[in-house]
Amino acid sequence: MSQLLSTIESPADLRRLSRTQLKPLADELREYLLQSVSKTGGHLSSNLGTVELTIALHYVFNTPEDRLVWDVGHQTYPHKILTGRREGMSSLRQLGGVSGFPRRDESEYDTFGVGHSSTSISAALGMAIAARLKGEDRHAVAIIGDGAMTAGQAFEALNHAGGAGTDMLVVLNDNCMSIDPNVGALKEYLTDIATSHTYNKVKDEVWNLLGKVSKFGPNAQAIAQKVENAVKSALLKQSNLFESLNFRYFGPVDGHDVERMVKVLQDLKDIPGPKILHTITMKGKGYKPAEEGSPT
Image (tube, rainbow, N blue to C red; front, side, top):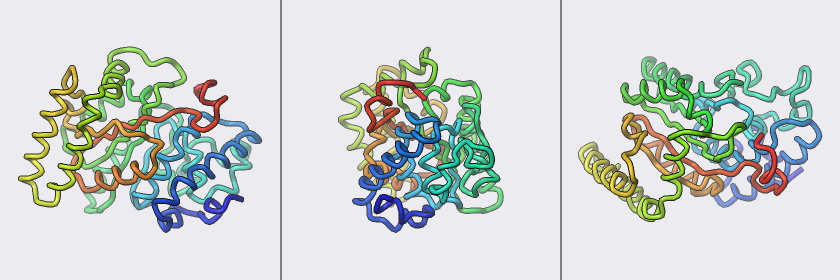
């Protein structure tokens, strides 16, 4: 058993690690996935691609009190391993064993039963609204892929959350590799953002500005947001789709840079309202046959 991974029975154990230990942990977790899935079968590529993202989310957010809602759910093996089901992975997708998808009756960390795509934003939105109505101080995070984001239900939820100003985070896990090829304007839009060299050059400076002024009250935040929006609009060929829906857009960020992901997510926790974090990942990360092979 690997040195760091063997010490983690819950996200509480994960949060005791230093940031510098997270990269070695990701390497161990990826190796464990390769060994485990090679015996049981399952979705390998998608899970190799979400290792660092999963670690960062559980490291930053106080799960299970904070709610993580995974879209589709086939990419949640790292999530299951970090939430007390590591030993059970030998029974993955077997009768009476660990499910291949999140199940609410399997773990308190599985907040929503899934299997179909594009439901995560709606579910997280409901959880965020429920928390507000009950006066509970907890976060709701939806993790959705670029393929699932093209569905109507995802846009209905974005429209609702943006209109209501709901305090929630959507993590767009953009790997450009859904089971069926993405088509249409959204694919081209995300590509435009991810490949805009000028935009990526200045976005960190804008991010640092927001981080500095967020501590000085709503007036400073409003001014900084206007600056941020103006810069984004000037650098992209079209206006920001997500910010047109009243979502603050951040990214794109390298989803395999786990220390950077932790810092970004910690910053986002302190920014109120609806937010979207655009991460770029690679399915099959770290295993060449999976990187070049099946998208599942």
